[in-house]
Amino acid sequence: MNMSATTSTLIPLEAVDPAMIEQLLDRAFGPERFGRTAYIVRQGTDGLPGLSFAAMDEEGLLVGTIQVWPVALTDPDGRRHPMLMVGPVAVVPERQGEGFGQALMAAMLDALDDRTPLPQVLIGDAEYYGRFFGFHAEPTGEWTLPGPWERHRLLVRAPNPAILPREGSLGPWRD
Ligand SMILES: CC(C)(COP(=O)(O)OP(=O)(O)OC[C@H]1O[C@@H](n2cnc3c(N)ncnc32)[C@H](O)[C@@H]1OP(=O)(O)O)[C@@H](O)C(=O)NCCC(=O)NCCS
Image (cartoon, rainbow, N blue to C red; front, side, top):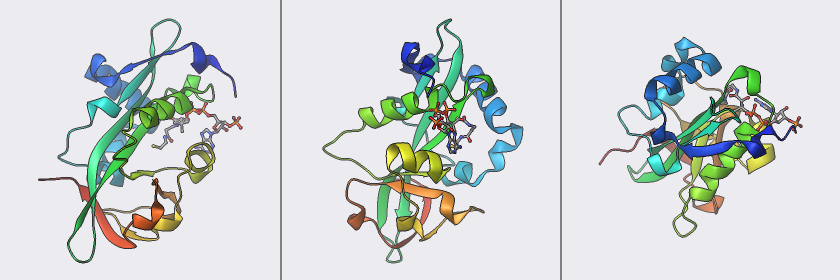
């Protein structure tokens, strides 16, 4: 891996102009991104500022972001299991492969509270999130989402996977 990211700066996402974040996400995912199932899962919730970061390059330009949202998996008995939904994780196309994605993920994981670690869920490539961060698709095999998804891309990372419900539907966390 090229280590440009080691000389970058990570700052709270809150400190970045929201319009610049939207521009970056359009570039990484395309403007049709709002129809993605991941957006529907967290609809109506506010992102968690303490777990959301931006990466700035050597010149202070925004090159990547990570956001995290409160969601819940509702099991067949109606019990709601709180989880953290990670994403989007995005790096501008011209700076991909330089370690920014991993730096953003590492910052988010470092910011999790070890005493109450909620399972983290995301829709993404297991080749990336499994290889570097230990996310797995196996526990999510019987979970459902409020929109189309590819089963092998629904990934979870949990300190103790045995506590994860086998079945359930994922949606926004609401009181
Ligand atoms: C996926 C993404 C976040 C990765 O961040 P990045 O800064 O480009 O990647 P890093 O520099 O941290 O990691 C590079 C390594 O990961 C691998 N990698 C990058 N993206 C990958 C992917 N989607 N699948 C598998 N491997 C991937 C690279 O091949 C490289 O491997 P190497 O070290 O063996 O050469 C970024 O490429 C991106 O924004 N892509 C477009 C949006 C997207 O698909 N987001 C993920 C869904 S939420």
